[in-house]
Image (cartoon, rainbow, N blue to C red):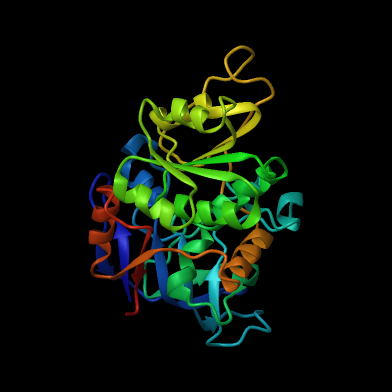
Length: 346
C-alpha cells in the first residue's frame, strides 16, 4: 500500500510504498477514507533529533476515518464496510481514566509504549490503517467522513476545553478565541451553540478574521500588541471570562494572560511553545490556567452529535495522497482555510 511517511529528521514527508498490514487478535483494519492534516504533525516534524521520540519511519495522520476492511481474531459485532472514525488518544484501557472514557488522561500509556496513530503508531495517511481495539472506533452513520474526519481532533480538542469552562460562560460572559484556523473556527461555532458568551476572535490577518465572522464570531480583531487592550475595551474593562489560545506561541499566551478577567479561565490549547507566568499579583485573582489535551471518547460522540444537528461544521480543503506534502506546505505557510483533508484512496 501507499503511505505518507516522515522518513528523515528535518526533511519533508514523502509518499512511499509499504506492506499492507494485517490485523492481529482484537485489531481492526480500516480502508482509510479521509485523514486530517494538523499543526501537531508540523510540531513533530520540527523537533531536533535529540528531542524526537515518535519513531522513524512514521506514517502520519492522527485524524482518521475509514470503512472496516478486515478484523482480527476475537473481534465481534462489527460489520465489514461500516463507516467509522478513529478516537486518537489511545490508553491502557484498564485504569480509572480509561474506564470513564478519558484515555487522553491515561497515566500509563507512555510507560506501556502506547501511542496514538500518527503520533508514534502508524497513522491514517495511508491506504489502510490498523486500529488496536474496537473501543477506539466511533460509528459515523450518515455523517460524511471527509467533511467530519477533522472533528476527531479539531472538534474534540476545543469541545473538551470549552466544556470545562461552560459553567462560567453564561449570558453576559465573554469568550476569546485566539487563532481561527483548524481548531479555532470550530471552537467559535461550539461557543455560539453551547454558551451565552459574546465571542471575540483574534488572528493575524483579515482573511482569517473574515472566516471567524463567517462562522459566528461577534467581534474579530487583529492579534497584535494592542489585542489585549481591545478585548478589555469590548468588555467594559473587565476582560474575558474565558480565553482559548489555539496557537500557544509566546505572543499569544501573553495576550491570553493579559486578556483574562478576575475568576476567568485561560485554556492554552496550542503547542507553540509559549508559557505563562502565574501567581499572586501576576495574574488576576482566582484566574485558572489549563493545558487541555484532546478529549474523551464520550465527548467525541457528543461532537459528532453536534455535527448531525448542523451545530458545527469544518471548512475543508481536500488533497490526494500524492498531494499530501503540498498540504503540509500550505499549512506551514498559513494558507489553509480551515482544515486540510487527505483522501488516501481517492
